[in-house]
Length: 106
Image (tube, rainbow, N blue to C red; front, side, top):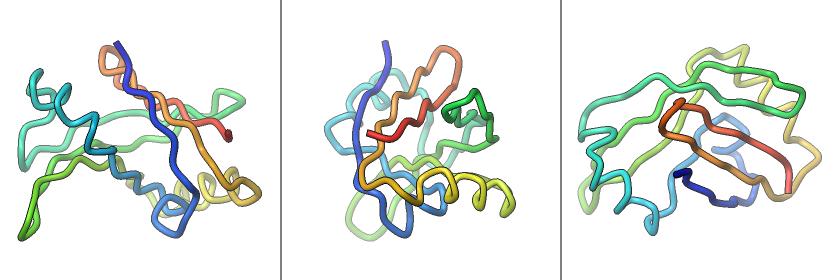
């Protein structure tokens, strides 16, 4: 099973920070794939098979918990932003079994 979602490109997405939509939390919660306070290594897979190391973590703020993908290295964030700069919407497909986040302009 994979988690499919679409986001509008904004400043946080340009930096490689992608918050998982709430309607997909139930799968991640049920499988305990990424427990609260833990981050797991994943790979962003961009068109052209460009691979960027990243992480998925679950955290909490004053009102709720949330899941977010993020890119670790500043130079990788620049590569990611460059690939998205001319696009308004981006499709994401996270495959938990191989820990890949496939990213493609919509």
